Image 1 (tube, helix red, strand yellow):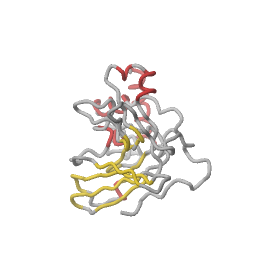
Image 2 (image 1 turned 90 degrees about the vertical axis):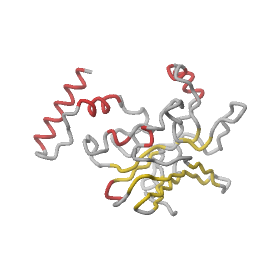
Image 3 (image 1 turned 180 degrees about the horizontal axis):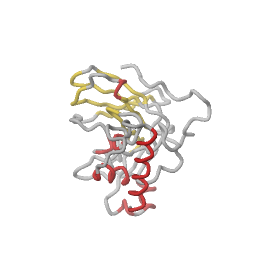
Image 4 (image 1 turned 30 degrees about the horizontal axis):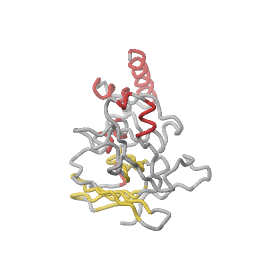
Amino acid sequence: MVRKYLLHIALCVGAAASSFGTSSCINDPVHNSAVNALGDETPGYPEESQYHRPGQPCTTCHWTQGPGSNKFVLAGTVFWGQCNITDQEALNPAIVKAKCDRQPVDRAEVRVLASKGGAKCFYTNCAGNFFVREDEWNGLTYPLLVSVSKKLSTGQYKVAKMSGHIGREPSCSNCHDNPARAVSPGQVYLYEYNEKGELALPAEAKALKCPPEAPNTDPPKECDL
């Protein structure tokens, strides 16, 4: 922790020297602790890219205090299946692998209705991530109503609607973290376990190359309402 703190100081000094007056480094121990708590990057995803850290709270870094380069007004990750584990099971990697589906949904459609500012729809990328920069939705005002849908290979749509509303939190995973418990419904997902304890996912719920091998194959940023 001491090493990380000293590294943060060094980065702040460097940023201040190279871009006087615009450094995103803030001498806020609470914020710095939250950034450090994110830990290492998620293996298999390019660091510091639109694909990195699926399932983590984006606006810990992508907010006024940085260190992310863009401020997001809304961001999150959509997964295929529910993560059905207890706090104790979460400590066992084998159980997490067997019972917690962490497969992200590519090209899921996230529809958002704002109390002011209208409605918009955003696609997720191959990491399941979607994000809305501040300049991409001027006038966005909370609370928000949100639904997620995905067109399957059968032509049907799988739809999941949020039962409540988003009051003011811009990062989905600040509330939707694992495991599901009294203070969290768990990760954002399309399919849940049935009464038999089975998680029946469609055939397309499989690992994808991320980022895509072919250029320009990411979905467009916004989808039709």
